[in-house]
Amino acid sequence: MTARKGSEAFQGCALPAALEAMGERWSFLILRAAFSGTVYFEDFQATLGIARNILSNRLGKLVANGIMSREPVPSDKRRIAYRLTEKGLGLVPVMIALRQWGERWSGNPPAGPILCDSRDRRPVRAVTIQAWDGRALEHRELCWVEREPQAPAQACAPAGQSQTPDC
Image (cartoon, one colour):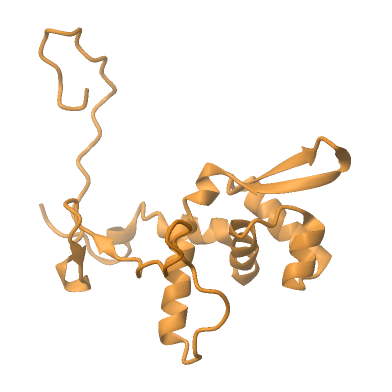
């Protein structure tokens, strides 16, 4: 198999789609507030000091991308709660990694609260890239490998008969 060259090497890369879904700085700050428990429009606005039109636009984009849900509050139909979806919660490690990177490389001393394990109340470790067996990997230990073509979905064989590895 030969290595792909130029932009073809990144065809199908999920990074541009992820960045498009996130938008820009305000989206990250909205997500940070949501991770911390903020759910109401007014609270996002007060916490972040963001203009109503920008907040409305960014929340709409996060909802449209399935990162947050928009739910009426049963006790007050005029209020809307914005909650992280499973897809949004999947961004927690990304947000933590970005914060840790910023704390290390921004040139400013770390400020604000420290992210801790709720059980032990000890700071979490730095986010790392891990091998399949749990080993921490450095950049020089990484490589890109072509994906195997996906086979059409097959039904698993009944118990007692041979099964394909995917079953």
